[in-house]
Length: 275
Ligand SMILES: NC(=O)c1ccc[n+]([C@@H]2O[C@H](COP(=O)([O-])OP(=O)(O)OC[C@H]3O[C@@H](n4cnc5c(N)ncnc54)[C@H](O)[C@@H]3O)[C@@H](O)[C@H]2O)c1
Image (cartoon, helix red, strand yellow):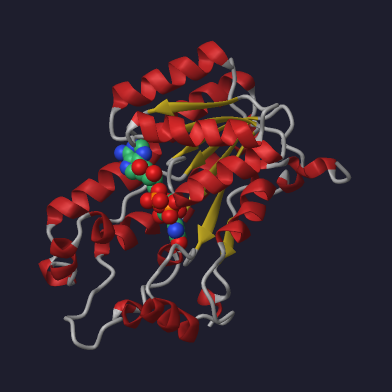
């Protein structure tokens, strides 16, 4: 490789939410740049194993494994880290991607209840359990291991809704139907992420551990045409993000190329928050 500072050779990387849209792409990028990848998700193990098999076919020389774990369960996360210590002895990079978005996970019911004044607090609490408490839980376990090895690198994943409020007109895709709103659970739980990264970054800066945030936005995933059109009008680049365009920022933050970065927020939003 002509740019060794971007190589991930020899690095052991744990990705949570690895079975999701971004998770699969990022695991593939990390394996491609030479890392050992531990992919974890709470989805059904057969699905995760299928993904691991596909990854291994694409990267036959890499050490890639899938571990089922639920970030809302202390026991589950503890077992995940026991396995990492036993098998790999160390962890160089943690990527916290696991999250839920109640509006989309709950279907039509949640859409009807998506107005702030009617938003069910049970859904807020479910999102807090995954997106906030789950994030903290996994990070605590990783930090304990990273402190024992005097080094580590954590990448948290926020949203443009960590930085600005949703423009609700994005979600109004059908003039005949009642308006759909981006609900508070996702916005509220994602808002903590950049400052959580700054907290971790400054707390452990002298321990060789760095922590940064990636802010993805609008990754295209077969969205309806009306949504794409709304997005294009509101976006300075005039289009959604291609999944491949998220690889570079995640590789950069995991690699030594970003060694002087900690506590920072890398915004990958096509300019959404620039105006
Ligand atoms: N896709 C986008 O456009 C976009 C934009 C901004 C931010 N993000 C953020 O990027 C991250 C990944 O997004 P995505 O689009 O890949 O989402 P996704 O829903 O496809 O993936 C999230 C993954 O997290 C897993 N997960 C959910 N609850 C879990 C739990 N309790 N324990 C373990 N795993 C759990 C899910 O099974 C899923 O595979 C999220 O943090 C999301 O907020 C995505």
